[in-house]
Length: 212
Image: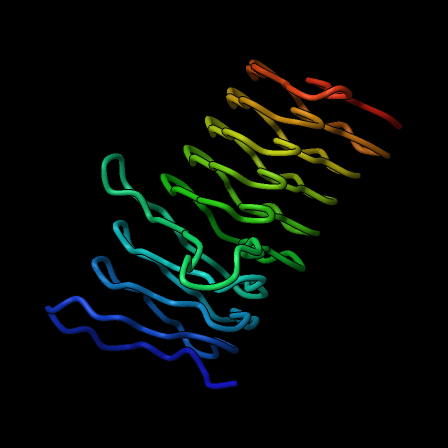
């Protein structure tokens, strides 16, 4: 691995190739293109900040894993864009995953073609006002108390998946899913309110499915 340490920035946009652990507080700057060529992990005690307008391209199967903190908050009209690197094989990039009580937020961001846009496992980041297109899973929450609000998931196998979670899932629009719009299973008491699930397609497609 080579560490992802980007601490200075010049005025001209640049292509940055990133892989491996982030071991110091780091900012990915607006206007630059970041190409994730191997898994990137934000280490405990470290914060990665992604500025509005930043473009992040992922090689197939690669993801961003958060053990420290992630602040990825775009602006209306200036979203952060998480995109596949389309020059490589058409295998989904992995997604953004928060682990082990890692804090942070993802908002006003656009995700194209991930396996799962954002996953939270044993963590509860704020996830709101994002758009996901063409995912396997839009959002996956496991043992999470996340507030997942005002997001759009368009074209996914599963829009939102919850397991053992007390997350608040509110005012999300989930369109054109082929398996489940929202699936909540095992223990947990998630709050599911004012979500719109439209155009569930496929022989066994279900809008809302709960078990446990």
